[in-house]
Image 1 (cartoon, rainbow, N blue to C red):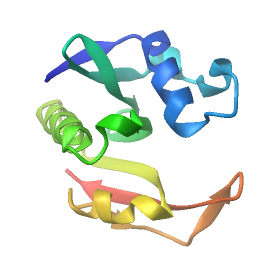
Image 2 (cartoon, helix red, strand yellow; image 1 turned 180 degrees about the vertical axis):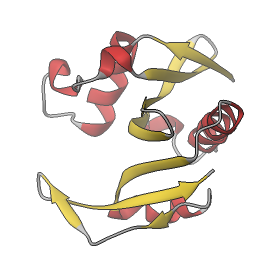
Image 3 (spheres, rainbow, N blue to C red; image 1 turned 135 degrees about the vertical axis):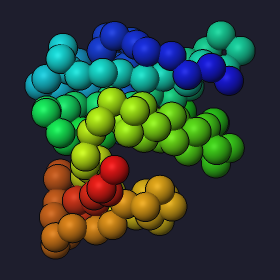
Image 4 (cartoon, rainbow, N blue to C red; image 1 turned 180 degrees about the horizontal axis):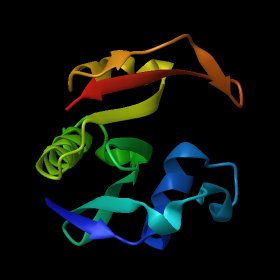
Length: 134
């Protein structure tokens, strides 16, 4: 397993396959992708997980984190998040946050993120903002 830095275009296929399988791949691009930092996990030459970090001076936001279904539950995403968190600490960021699907709260809590605010919905999917001071 290798963690690499990607360009935003390299993230689209996995984002689409995992997060929006019923939408065209172009739906997976988000505003700000050109300025974000994108990470991926490669196993045996295959990109299997992606995550994007959108940041300003002191805050970093995780967006579009996705691992291919056949690679989920193996700790790959956890290793990627741990790597990203260490990078952010090393770079002096003070806050890490994301909009987490309600079904993934337990995953993010393992990394010290806590719910901040009320449940909200995006396209009929329940989310919570989760934050961690670095």
